[in-house]
Image 1 (tube, rainbow, N blue to C red):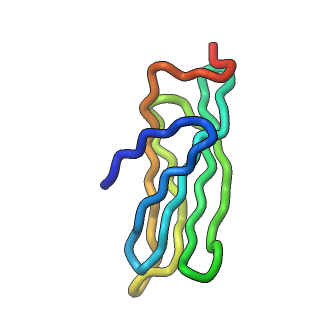
Image 2 (cartoon, rainbow, N blue to C red; image 1 turned 135 degrees about the vertical axis):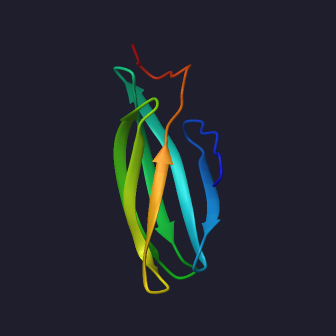
Length: 88
């Protein structure tokens, strides 16, 4: 588990199991929702790239890359109070 503090225009990165990396960025806000971009990559290529919007307190589950005898499930929980970028 790792907390990331996102600022628009900056990418936060974290290592995840299996020698992979998770990149997360805040892409903007509208009507109390944040738009986030998530990418998973290894040293050679991008494996997953998706954008989604979420409200504060929600958890989004993403099916990630293969790991051991299964797949990683990536849970992203948003918690924001001072959302800018057009939020109401």
